[in-house]
Amino acid sequence: QVQLVESGGALVQAGGSLRLSCVASGRTFSSYPMGWFRQAPGKAREFVAAISWRPGNTYYTDSVKGRFTISRDNAKNTVYLQMNSLKPEDTAVYSCAAGRQFSYYSPSPGQYDYWGQGTQVTVSS
Image 1 (cartoon, helix red, strand yellow):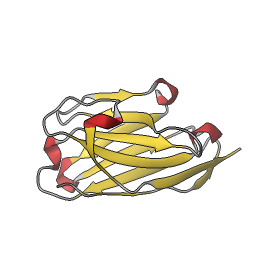
Image 2: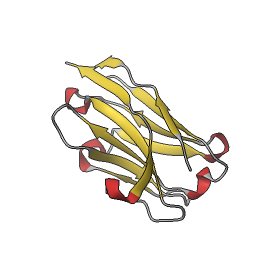
Image 3: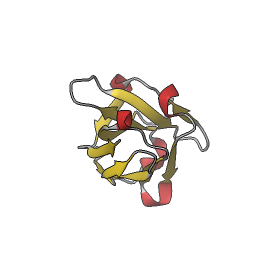
Image 4: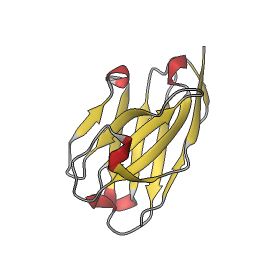
């Protein structure tokens, strides 16, 4: 069982930056691929970024490439999402998720077994 707690969401102006954090419980965090998803009001959940359990492998949806960076610190059981050059269309509840141990990272929510409660990001124009 993995429990995830996100933090770092806030109200920010367009062009600004935020760093989201997701702290995981458990001693085997390093063996899980991790993902960030977001959901805006009235819209479906959307994949944002993922990082494999192996060092160095990351994956982004096209709309955030070059602006967002996902990273992890296994010593702290934490995955981060650095968000730069934020746009109003980035406004959403952002959630982190843990996939299946030793599995390949994926953009599909169905490949993730554990979810955090989410943190609100609001970007004003």
